[in-house]
Image 1: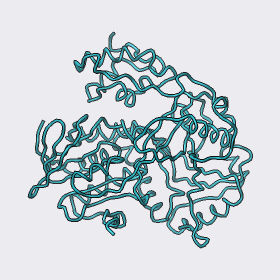
Image 2 (image 1 turned 120 degrees about the vertical axis):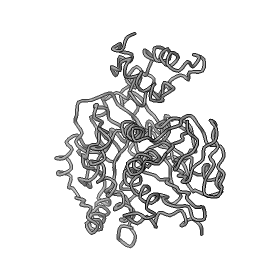
Image 3 (image 1 turned 180 degrees about the vertical axis):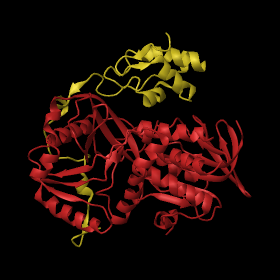
Image 4 (image 1 turned 45 degrees about the vertical axis):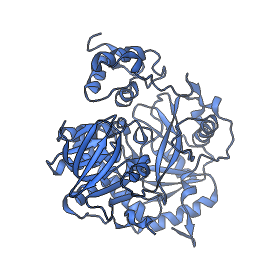
Length: 358
Length: 109
């Protein structure tokens, strides 16, 4: 294996692999991706993988998410079938107070070009006949959808490798040295050098930042998800809380717990998740749960992506975010522009790590 | 075993499909599972895990004792959602997306 690269990306999850792929489309310079385990063994492989836009707040963040969601159809054409489905997204609500919120949301987002419809009970049930008839209404947007996260990361990886990107897996980075004009990256499998270094460590970003004395304020947020046996197709939309996959399985979950890196599944949250499932879609009660899994989300301190150059260290970049599945096509595109051209087609100043330096 | 041998009966994954991801860098059962769905079905790899272990051993020369076991998931055998549900509609760890939409002065933030 070569030891000298133009660019090294630490982290081969959905964000790191997307950057690697998009970079490999534009440049023939050598790119290496280092992963402490194997891509998909962490956050990217333990997600419901909604491509979700319509009730992200504030509106500028929803707009950013929308640009990424819109790239998915083109991406699927380029890297192959990732089971992307723009199903439309449905967020049901069960009390009248939420309708007021929903109407405000729809009004505000119309101005940025995200069409949200506030559905009456009857309209919601017409769209999704298996919803609980006690539903009061729902917000709906055609822009949302979902994707198969395993296929997605695998396809990014394969496409990147085909374009010459190298992956070194089960290879944890232990030390990073900044030298004039280059970085020395020390890993369990030896030393590598590069001009550009990208930190895409997801949940581990804080630990990775310590190697270069940079505070990357990413915390962990656990989510637990239930998976049913394959059922005949009966859910039409990505519902915020559950969705049906191509193979008929229903994935259910929207829990949040601060448990660090503990990836256990726990009975209380499994039960609460089962309650949510039968509350939203009562006929699910007869469906069998095949397994439960938990994933650790990467959650920036203020909830928003951390993207771009790291000030004060030449050629050092960071890309760490929540909602990596939704945002990966855009992040890959913009980080590539930033590295190769020094600027991005959509401004990312708002997402700079410098906002935390106060 | 030949290339068409079905290794995972639940998901109908063949020897050839697993061989392909092993040559692509996968080294553990769980790597293979995520890339092929082998072992992701209702039996949770109770049938296929030893066959896969022998393939990993064969392709990567990893001694058997160093091949990690597949991660087993709750509930180990499929059960109905209504068995797990307690019919409560108050939630603490489970959120709703609409809860996360915050209004400020009657406007979306």
